[in-house]
Image (cartoon, rainbow, N blue to C red; front, side, top):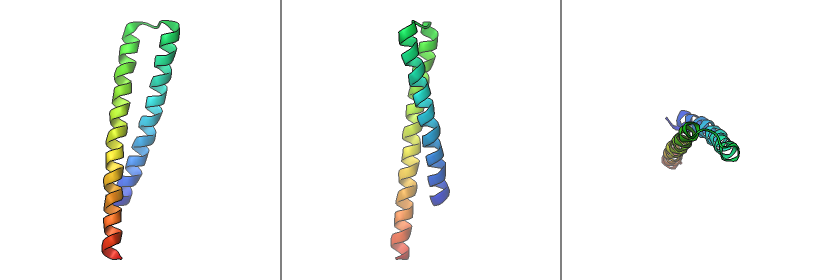
Length: 76
């Protein structure tokens, strides 16, 4: 899991960071243009989902990083 876990986590972080930024942009535009409430609600839920995705992928990254460190300690 170590290297593939790191790669997967980084890809997930990048994906969710992009989703977070895009959703934040839509929310900002909605505040300026008085978009319908249902769109704002959907975007707020999307923002939370992107946040949780980021947190989950960061946890995977930290676990994989710790595994690599432990492996290096064992092999050293």
